[in-house]
Length: 265
Image (tube, rainbow, N blue to C red):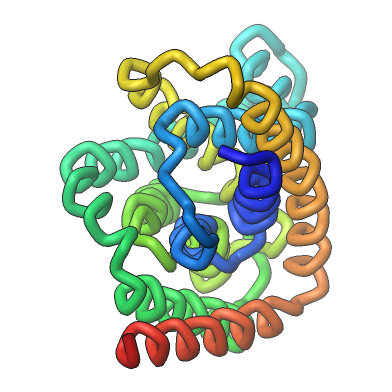
């Protein structure tokens, strides 16, 4: 893989992994239109996911530390942190079940641009509904079992190319009456076990990286990390300011364009 393609895919992965526009859908589109593009293999995918996961860990490092240390603390916040950790574990269960059972089926859809475009329209619909119907109120420590299970199911379904993981999970929580900041934080924290688990499962299939590909792979991962940090900060601000509708319009336009292209070709 050449450096330009690696950096471009890293940029797409970093931005769209966290902005509510679907990383899988945009990667499928980018790979389709890159001239002479050849799949780089699982090693590159693992590196990109590791880079974006590192971006989440660094941005939410204080939240993560509180969750990891909650059983060893006796302060007033420890009980709340234990509750949030339990909800994250509960939400990860349906995601894992859907991911394991549907992995092969969903993988076959990534080259179907009509499916990608159609799923982008669904993402646009979810974002629009969340923006129009959302009723902020409940905080992060008020997320309950049904919230966690539902958002875990939604995250599992986001394996479909074109369904934004961050967009669909945040929209789900907003529609459930969760505060915007809390919805975004829970969505990003819930992504860690999902992305980490998928990355670990892929390690067994990763072949040795050719020496000539190392610079491109490393630059692609670095680009994904830097753009991922930017995208997280951007989305947190967007959710707080109630401006998801711009991303809904973007997904609508791209979805229509990709569907039209797929029908004409």
